[in-house]
Image 1 (tube, rainbow, N blue to C red):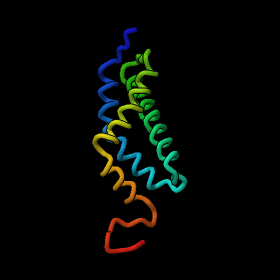
Image 2: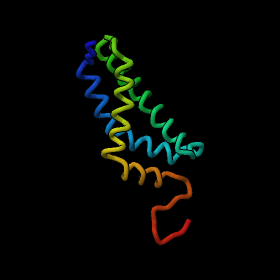
Image 3: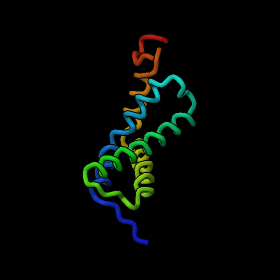
Image 4: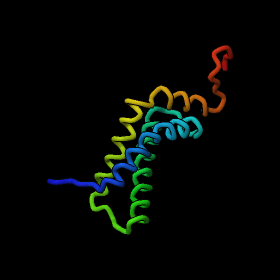
Length: 112
C-alpha cells in the first residue's frame, strides 16, 4: 500500500506542529475547565485534529484539490504535535501553561 501526501501540506503541518505545543500549553492554562491530565491530553489531540483541518482547508483554498489521504494527514498531525511536545517543547510549554494558569505565579519568592 503506497501512501503519498503532497509535500506542501505535510511541510506546513510539520511547521505548525512545532508551534502547537505552546498553543496547547497556553490553552491548558487559560481554560478553567481543563484540570485533569486526561482533559489536557484530550485538548492536545483535539487541537492537533483542528490543526490538520486548517491545513486541509488552506490547501484546498490555495489549490482547489482535495487530499485523498486526509486521514493520514490527521494522524500525522497528532504524531507531530505529540512528538514536538515530548522531544522539544516540554519544559517551555509547561512554563507557558503555568504562566497562563489563573492565580499561579512563576516567582519563587511568593507563595500562592
